[in-house]
Image: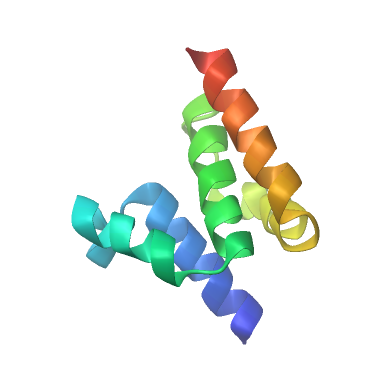
Length: 85
């Protein structure tokens, strides 16, 4: 169940859904959520920018990366953001 909740939180944060539409709520989440959830959200956000029509189910691999290697997932998200700019 925790894995499902973490994935839902990461998706909500990355897509700015619901409570996370508010920038202040997103900022507050950074101090409350675990590193894997934050890394997952960052990676989802960057992957969605690269492939806007990607379905969340198509990005399930991002959760596995963020869960096993949150620091690497964060670096990958930063790399993708840098490549995009």
